[in-house]
Amino acid sequence: MATAKEATQVKTVDDSVILDIPEDLENGSNTLIVGVNGRVYKLMRGRTTRVPRAVAEVIVNAQEASREANRRIQVLVEQAAKKAAKA
Image (cartoon, rainbow, N blue to C red; front, side, top):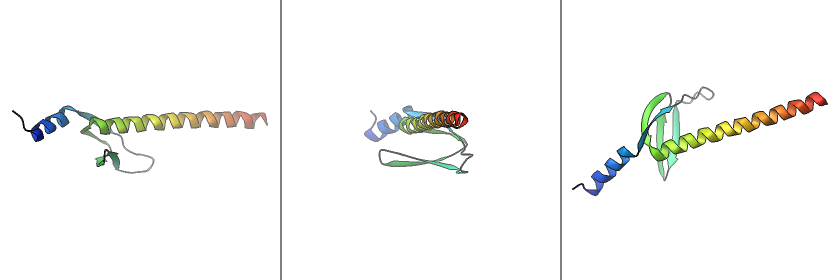
């Protein structure tokens, strides 16, 4: 029978995700810092790494939020350009 520590380690391995951490070409940062439930993870950019599922969710959600913000900014820029062209 597995001890509590062994069971936790097995669960962590089973509940992990292999994730590509993209490089940050805009800021030149080579690390990505992610905090989940009081734990901080420092991940190297430009590498494939195994992370807990919760960390992967935070990264994916942040990327989706960033894409949505950029999409909204683009819409506002286009609206402003149309208004400026009419004036």
